[in-house]
Length: 250
Image 1 (cartoon, rainbow, N blue to C red):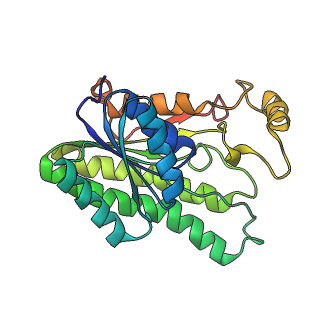
Image 2 (spheres, rainbow, N blue to C red):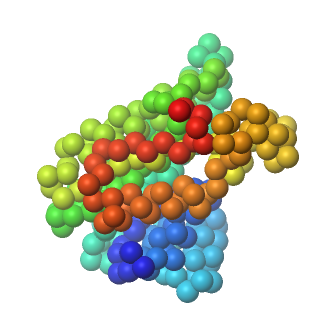
């Protein structure tokens, strides 16, 4: 129970990595705030946590809205008295070459994946600095700072920026008691790793041939790594961008 009596905010908690991370923290004793845009999906996350005896609340927020993120963090501090851990999972995916991608799609990917993390950290860090402690883990990607793929320029640029932003923020805030790191997953067992028209069996066959480990990553594997980075066991880890991609970028 590494996170007993800790207050943990997870953005993008309505599905995928965010839901798995929220569930993982709750299993280890944390009071979890599951945040995101979709009320119904967030409430489903809360139900899954409460079914195992965990504690969770669902709060809606758009990470691209600075005022909204500010209100969210203030509400958490008012309700619980502090914010111990924040995991920024909210993100979107869009494909398209530099020539073909509509400019509005480019702008949206950067707005959610990069500016969303910036705004979330801006308010999370302020609350943590005020209390003199806190941990932040950002979800980046192996596509970006570590590998590139044709047709994914916007996504790669947005996630590479998250890696650089994480490391910069880590340097700026560690002396104030706020420890910041990132995790960069490869293909995971989510719909995002399915190519157009693929089913899971098709993906499994493709990944067996293309990825050194021969399989997609499990959500619990990513969640477990996030929990380690957020725990005291990783107390000397500052500005780390930990790649979990089955050897794709080895």
